Each structure stands twice: as structure tokens, then as C-alpha cells.
Length: 624
Image (cartoon, rainbow, N blue to C red):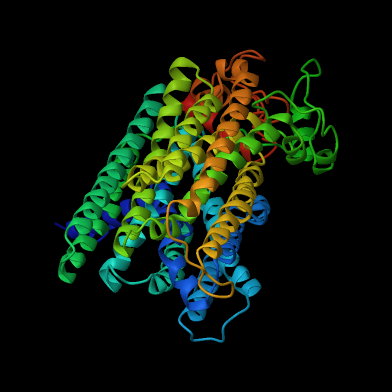
């Protein structure tokens, strides 16, 4: 059959398929899937325990020097103020390109140094290399994760839990890939090369899809449908995590696991990683076939002074107007912040008591669990675990790191929405559970490192979505890119205190007591290597739980309210457009200057891009 324009049925179908494929790739759900892949490759810092032995042996470091290197890794991974500031003024692709370049350069130089392909670098230069490579994780988090949160603001806890969960899984994914490529008994040097090129390649491939998008969502039914889709992503990630857990157990028990079998496991792994594409296509097909809903911005946009002046001209003189907000106000009213949940300036947030309390709790909690994770290789070696078992322990940490992130994201969202349980109270419970893992290491229980790795991996992962969700809820989303990265700074602070100054120093003291010599590969054997350190870490973590409980008490009234009410109002406003009197015409009033004022139906001239969107939405809803 040939149509009037000369095209046949096959050509029409091909054109329709291409249009739908373009719709999928440009959609929010594909953006979320691309963010998943970027996050799944951005957790190389969590497998330091596998390749740390290669660094220590080849460069002749003692434990304190190795822990100093680990500290700079944590600094690079968590001090993301720079990508946060860059993201405030540039599109996300700029942040991702910078991160890809830093990842490649940093880890490639470590690989060349460890394998002897370059002259042995001084310690300070190795610290620079690993800080640059690890800092790419902050760029990936800022470019992909922050953008996803802004695209799905009402489901931020779920989005944070899922994406940070895949960061946790990345360690197990890297472990499975390197076992298939290099063998299970490899010392980890070649793993650094894999970490150098793979995350950079993934970021560059998916850069065009990572952007902030307007959203079409106007009813409660649509809200439930989106939440249901996130649960499908959750189920897919659970299957992936369970598969990785089973493969770790099988490979640990079967020491003669053949190389071809590793290839099969990697093929299955890749199929499971890309399975969420089915969910993406399903969601976008529904959006493609159904009538389009009016489009609004995903978050209340902040108008500039010019926008406010123009909008004020379209309103009646009796209507109150919000004072203009400019960059000059960043240095005003620092110690007079708005109500919790409104958009704080950066300085208002940094100097607030809530941020100070949250920062201290994070130093105690994340610092302790990160010390255990970074020293997992040396802890296992001191207790007599073989290299294969140490790799399995690191992989277990990664899998349960994922579980903690996902469970914390979904569970805290559930208990918050249904029972109004403050998120800081959930953080308190997580820190109390972490104390048990630290005590298992301190006591040196036979085979106790396996349950300890499960507990500490879970608790380490659970703290991150809770931390980032608390920051977004208390301090708003306007400067979230910067505040998100400031919250992560607590991790290297805690790591330096607990890892370098306590664990590393006491390990070396015990190794010297056993007859080791400085300047050599200091190796300590026995329970006492880390015993005193982890008693101290357990006490510090308990202190962090008490501090977190203080924050839960301070914010109890705030969490009893409707945290996401203003986002729901923005999403629902276009569907109520009609020629109503002033004040009931569907106008979206800003909260303390945080939202854009929509133009009235009588005035077709919008004052800015957000107003134009609101006006178009009103016209669309009235024509329906």
C-alpha cells in the first residue's frame, strides 16, 4: 500500500519507530536509566580494599601511609564543592565531561605507578593521583544524581535510594568484571586500569541524555503511576544484587571455578544491568500514546529581579508582592534563615545549627564505617583470610552497601509519609546497628568478618540517602548541588580522624611491636592489630547516634507537616486553570520568593520562562 505522499506501510512504520525511539531517548525515564548506569560505574572508591594490597606491596608503604592515601581518596570522593558550584552555572554535561577526564587521568597514573611503568612517585603525588581519580565520583554524583532529584522532586527519597544503591553495587560489579578478565587471584593492580577507562566511557556515552527536563504530571493517578515505576526499578535492582550475592558465594566455595564460567556470569550480569530499559520503554510508551498533560517545571523556579518586576506589573495593586532575591542577598541575613523546608542560601545553611548537628553525626557514623571498609583488606589479612576471601568480603560490603541505600531510601520515605517519622530518627537507628559491626571486628570473632562486612556495608550505604534527603528537605533545592556536596565533606573528616590518626597509627604500632621495620611493608598479624581502634570507633559511632537523635528531636514538628506540598501544588495547578476571580485563577503563589508567579489568563504576556509554561498550560487545559 502506498500513501498519498508516496511512502509505503513499511516506511511509515519505520518512521513511527524512529519517532518513538527519539521520544524514549529524550524522555525523563531514559535520563533516569542513564543516571543508573553512570552511578553503577561511579563507586570505584569502595573497592580500595582489593587493590590496596598491590599499592602497599609494590610501593613499600606502611599502614599509616596507606591509610593516608585512603584519606585522600575519601577527600576526592566526597569534597564536591567545585562540581556543585560548576553545576549551579553550567548544564550537567559540563560536570560529567570534567568528571570523565579526571577519572581517566587519576586512575591511569595510579596503574602506571603500581605496575612500574613510570618512576616511583613520592607519596604526595600518589595522594594527588588518587584524589583526582576519586573526585570524579563527586562530578558524577552532581551531574547525574542531582539532576535526577530535580526531575523527580516528589520522589526524591526513592530516587536517592535507588541511584546511591547502584553506586553501592558498583563495587560488586567491578569485582565480577575483573575476576572474569584477570582471574580471581589477581592482586588488584589490573583492576585499577578497568576503573580508569570504564566509568569515563559510560559518562561520555550518556552525556546528551542527562539534563533537567520539564515534566508532564497533573493528577494523583500519575503520581501513583510514577511511584509504581520506581518500584519496578527497585525489583530489577534487587534481582541484580541477589545475583551478585549468589555468584560471590558460589565462587568462594568453588575454588576451581573455570574461566569460561566467569564469562557466562558477566554476560548474565550485563543483561540484568540493562534490563531496566524495558521499564523505561514501557513508561515512555504510555506517555507517547496517551494525550499529553500540561507541562510544568519540576520544582518551583526562582525568579530574578527582572522577572519579579515584570510580574508585579501584571498583578493588581492590592496583591502583596515578594521582595526580590538577588545574589547580593547571599551575604545578608546569614543568621536569620527562613523556615525549614524553604530555600536557604548557601551561607544560611552552612551556619545553621541543623547543618552543624547533621555534620557531626555524619563524621561519627560515616567515618567509622568507611574506616572499616577501607581497611577490609588489611583486617582480613591480619585475621588470616586468603586473598580470594578478602575480595569476597569487599564484594559483600558492596552488595549490602546497595541494600542499605535502597532500603533507607524507600523505608524512610514510607515511614515518613505514613507515620511522620523524622528521617534523622531513622539515621539514629542505623548508627546504633553499625556499633554491632564495629564490635564484631574488635572482638575478633571466628568468621565474624563476614557478618561484620554485611552489617557495616548496609549501615554505610543507608547513611547516604538519609543524609542527602535530610539536606534537601530542611534546606530546600535551590542550592542543593552545593549543599549536597558539602554534606559529603563530613566523610573524609571522619576518615582522617578514625582511619589515619587512630586505625593506621595503632596498626603500625602493633606491627612494630611484632618485629616489623619502618620503611618496609609493615604487616601486622592477629586480633590486636585493629582491636583497640574499633573499640574507639564503636564508641564514636554511638556518640553520633546520640547527636542524630538530637536532630530528630529538633525537627520533629517540621516532619509532621506536608514536606512536598508546594511541589504537588505546582504539578496540579495547570489542571485547574479557568477564568476565576483574582486569587482563585490557578495562580501559583511563591513561598518566600521560592516560586514563580504565573500569569493570569487575562494577561497573555508571561514574565519569564516559568510563567510562559504556566500560561501555556492554562490555555491547554481550558481548550480541553
